[in-house]
Image 1 (cartoon, rainbow over the protein chains, first blue to last red):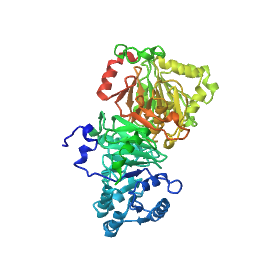
Image 2 (tube, one colour):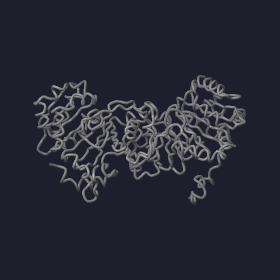
Image 3 (cartoon, rainbow over the protein chains, first blue to last red):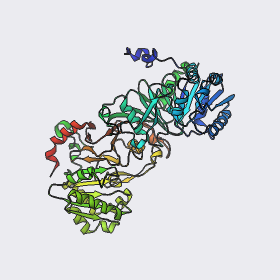
Image 4 (cartoon, chains in turn yellow, orange):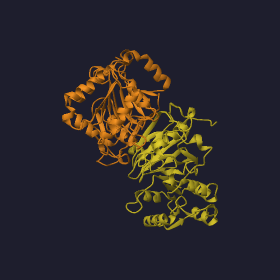
Length: 302
Length: 302
């Protein structure tokens, strides 16, 4: 058991501090279909979150079955944003993910970007590799780690990799496995409003109410600041499903396939400029978010 | 302003009693695609809620553009359930909806059933007609009024008749108009989980948090008991989105098409046998629902 101490005196992060290393970098989870050719609002913000002295970008297309189509697109976008170098990394098998040259390119980069595709490819190829360890190490040291669609969904310690939304509130309908372990305390779902995936996060929330459900719409993203404040960016929505006050659910009593009951989850819809404090579970309207980010600004950058 | 008095002494219905007539009959709102040929679980329950001395059923196919395909199907189902007579009513224009013979058949029927189709056809043809007045009068007198899909969505005083779920959390994306005025205090959406319509009820909840959002899945239904207790039936889900504690939303400040922010809605997923007390806003697990329905049973039937 973790011994809990007053948050007021020690800050919301304290109770996990002995278990998780302090992270200096930003995480950006994108819901998919982000603009790559016009205003680049989300990708611009990703690039700006890199450490000031490092404009190298690594694009990892492992999740995708069409890396040759995705990579030039991201190369062009980040070059346009001012990247000094863009490392286009296909990494299609575990050998490549263990390659010291790949590791070196990750270590050099201030932005590490995971494309969309299939999150199970991402975990299957990266799990336990030196490249994944290098990504986590770079994040701790101050690099920004961003991912879109599958690249966002794979970030938590446990990820959703399958489950039809129409059936998702039936026991076992959502398929989950270990994720990349880049972000803690949440489950991330992408294409969220467009594919009506509320039920997926509801099933996950019923199975374990501790984890925050973060559902990201297309052309929307959430920044996880080092102080564990979420910030929504982009023209779309970020939906929060907070199950921590779940009053009851029948999930443990059901046979597989039976419908899951849920009593009391809390639902928020964030738009660009709004935020959410993960640890105090507080929605932040624009002025509140600005005040908090201004106050903590000194701690956020290396 | 309505003068409020303690609910404990007068019951949850009292504060509306001076404005709304007492209703003796049951309302059943079905999410669409209910079983019509196998176990008939939902339709059986609809039929059983009719007054004991009245086994006549009126099927109104006004919403549908293919009434000749729907009517025989419902005729067969209710005949199989024991209906003494089934009145198959196409009612495709306002003249038919004003016809005294139609009114007479409604008045005779213990079950009045509205098929699916387009809810705007239903309101456009029935609004202000003698048939609609007869339906409301029969409900007050003890008949069951049931509707599926469009027939359920049209029941509230204000209804949703259009709005792509993927865009629905943008100001103005959900199209609403006056409904049939059969059920009060809620907005009803059908095919809810299958079409991922959570955002539609969120937009409506942001626009007016007083009204309860009731999203009904396919082959699921909700009974509105005369004492304002909801009961979920059928193999699917009934989702409740309760916006009455909404903390903030930007909806009033937005231009049309801009994304709507929502801080704090409460979400429940009900399964068959679970319930919800509309006036006290309380989720009822199976034992609680049974106890309440057993206690009020004497008042429920004419």
